[in-house]
Amino acid sequence: MTQMLQGLMQDDFPLTLNHIRRRMRDCNHGSELVTLLDDGSVSRIEHPELTKRIDRLARALAALGVEQGDRVASFAWNNQRHFELYVGVPCVGAVLHTLNVRLFAEQLTYIVNHAEDKVIFVDDSLVPVLEPLAGSFESVEHYVIMGDGDAGGLPGALRYEELLEDAGDGSFDYPELDERQAAALCYTSGTTGNPKGVLYSHRSISLHSSATLMADGSGLSRADRVLSVVPMFHANAWGLPYGGALAGSDLIMPDRFLGAEPLAGLIAAERPTLMGCVPTIFNDLLRYADAHPEVDLSSLTNAACGGSAVPRQLMKDFEERHDVRIFQAWGMTETSPVATYARPREGEHDDAYWDDRAKQGRPLPWVELRLIDGNGVEVPWDGISTGEIEVRGPWIAAGYFREDDEDKFDSGWLRTGDIAAVDEKGFVQITDRAKDVIKSGGEWISSVELENELMSHPDVVEAAVIAKPDERWAERPLCCVVLREGSDADAAALIEHLRPKVAKWWLPDEFAFVAEIPKTSVGKFDKKVLRGRLAEGTLEGRVQLS
Ligand code: AMP
Image 1 (tube, rainbow, N blue to C red):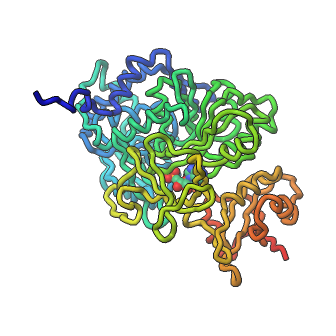
Image 2 (image 1 turned 135 degrees about the horizontal axis):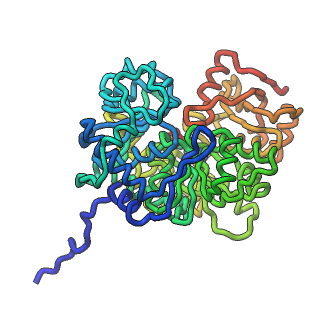
Image 3 (image 1 turned 120 degrees about the vertical axis):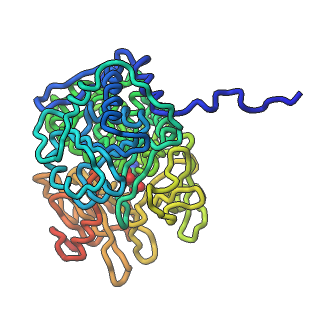
C-alpha cells in the first residue's frame, strides 16, 4: 500500500481578505471603528455592522461595472469609508490602489494612468486637490465622493452614501479568490525615475497581517485600541488596519487631523494602546505634551514608529516624561512594509537595552535578511561590518507592476538600498540610505548616527545630515539643524555635544541652521531638497567652523 505523504491538510484553503471580512462579521462583536469628524466629535461602528456596509459596497462596485482585476483607487485620509474600501474592493476581486494625496500633480497623473484606475473614491475634503487633475486621467470612468461636501467639477460624480443606499441590504455572493491574485496597489517614489507600483497579493497581506499579531512584532490583540496615524495610502498604514481587523482590535482613525493638538485630544479621549506613525509626528506630539502637562498620553503602551530612524532620545523622553512606550520598526513599501521590529528582551533598562531599542530590530519570522557589500560579497553579522540590506520572504515584492527594474532584485532577494550592520543577536542597525551615504577620505560616516546624536541635544528639534563636496576629503558631513524656539545653542555648542559621542573625524565642520527640514509626501526628511539647495547656494543659515 502506498502511503499518502501529502494532501491530508487543507493546504488549498486560500489566504484571502475574505477571511478577515468574515472574522469581522462573526468573531469581532464589540470591536469598534472610531473616526474623528470635522466638528471634533467621533463616529463609531462595530465590526459586524461595518461588514454590512461592506456588503453594500460590494454590490455597489458590481453595479459600477467593477470586475475582477480592475484597479479601484482611493484618494482619502484615514477614516471609516476608506477602511470599507480596504476590505470591500479586494473582497470582490478588484485591486485597491491607495493614492498618496500629497504627491505632486504630475506624479498623481502618472500613477493613475499607469495603474489604469477605473474608479476613484475621493474624500469630499480632498475634492479640490483632485479636481484640477481629472482632465489628465485617461482611464477613470467614475468619481465617487465620500461625504456630503461639494463635488466640485469632478465629471459625473456619484455619492458614496447614495450608492450604498441603492445597493440594498442582504449578503453578497463574494467570488472565490485565488490567494495569489492582487488585492492592493501602492506606488513608491524611487530614487530615480517614475514612482513604482508594488502589488500586494491576498496571500502577502494575509501573512503580513498575521505577523502584526506576533508578540515580537506590533503584537496586536483583541484587547488593543489601535490609532492608525500613518496614512492608509502609505504601505497600507503599515498593516495596522488589516491586522487590527484580523485581531479584533478597536480601530481609531484621525481622518485628516494629524496635528499634535487634535491627536493629543483624540488619544486622551479614546485611550488607544497602540499608535503607528513616523518620528516627525511623535516629535510634534512630544513637544505639545511637554508644553501641556494636562495632556494624558499614557494609554500608549505599545506605540510603533518607523519610516525613518527613530531617535533614541525621542523614545526615552516619551517613556520618562509621559509613560509612553515606542518601539521601532523598519521596512519599506516593497516589504508590505514591516520587516524588522526592535523588541529587546525585557529586563533592566540599561544602556545595552536602549542600544537595542534604538536599532531597527530583528527580522520578523518569515523574513530573511542578508548584507551585501559593494563587491557583491555577503558581510558577517558582527555589528560592525556594513552592507546593503537584501530581504526575501512571503510579503516581500518580487518585481514592480508593469516595470522592469532588474537592478532592484538579486536572485529572489530584494535590494533595499539601505546600508546597515547586523549584530550577533540579529539586530539590524541602519547607518544610511545608499544614496545618502557620506564618504570622507574613503571612510563612511553614518548620517543616521550623527542625526541621532544631534537630536539627543535638548535644543535640537530636527537634524538632517547631508554630504558636502570637499576638495580634500571628497565629502564632509553638513548638519542641517532646526533649533527649539528661543534656543541660543550655536555650532560650537553642538560640536561639544557631539565630541564625546562620535569619532573625531566625524565632527562636522559646517552647520546650516534652518527653519524647517523639508519633508517628503510621507513625512520623511527630504535630503534631496537639501542637497539641491546646497548645490544652488540657497541653503540658509550656514555656519562654518574654522
Ligand atoms: P517607504 O517605502 O516610503 O516606506 O520608505 C522605505 C524606506 O524608509 C526604507 O528603505 C528606509 O530607508 C526608511 N526607513 C523605514 N523605516 C526606518 C527605520 N526604522 N529606520 C531607518 N530608516 C527607515
